Length: 388
Image 1 (cartoon, rainbow, N blue to C red):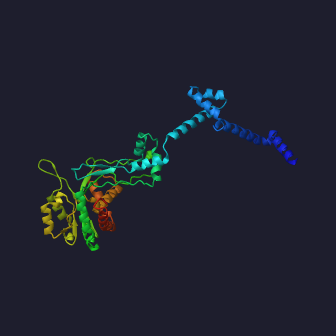
Image 2 (image 1 turned 30 degrees about the vertical axis):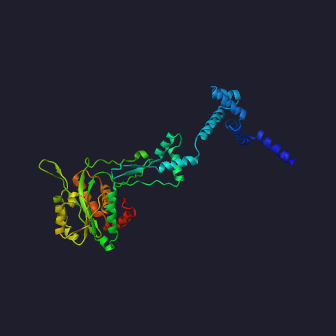
Image 3 (image 1 turned 180 degrees about the vertical axis):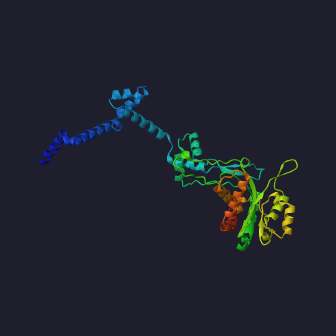
């Protein structure tokens, strides 16, 4: 009796509230309205007969408003009922996740090889290297999948995306020469590695070689990296040499023209004059000098000059092997430092920035680059002469 009395009092309190309790009354009507809306919006309240009627009327060309009026349900309920049928039909037409992932795995591992039997050089590259390309191939096979779905499938298969490095194209003969050279260099002692001096020419330009990233609030504020051909911006060819506790001055190679006004590239005479002007010939007599297979380096007059000066050469240096030359890392660092110092608007400014950047590289960094030659050689042998 007491519980019934309390229940009756609570009902009277909600239905006939005092003026300060109008808030409770509004909450009661709000709860009742939400229940009605939920009953109207959900499709689970429809019986099998009603869902069949909705499907039949929709096939007969009856509009959703007329279906809702005839069945005395909301138009939202009709729309959701039809949408649920379409989604179920679409799900039945899709392949199982396991089958789709097996197709994605086979596509990701497909390799294309280009080359003929008469040619000693073959090129290999992945046929489907991105999620969008794989998703497009799946759609061509009648399987609907977005690039995000393909990304999740690839991650679920244990695959990871890695950057594909740019490497020179080496034939089987080049790989054999590289392997023989690296096997011999691998047997050298640490003292021999520290006596090596690596040299090369390099083109520097006023292009932007700074970081790829920029911290901004909006994407529209990002400044694009403008990279032009070196023929459209100030550019210079330089020469340098580095080794353990060794650094040559950065030599600027000036352009010269012949009698007909044509530009003369680097030849043996210019290269010999460059070595003599650099002031490193005396220091190289106690070192082992490395130079690549450029024609000006391998000319008979150049080798005769180095022999007369008592300079020992690291030979035979294999062709197409910039990946094992430590000075290539120095050139990449030099380009970044030039961009950090400023933008050159003339050849003179670029020359000044290049020399300043070259002298700002710590000798400890150059020593680390030079000593990395031993690791590069070991990795080349492990890769059976392929690029490291």
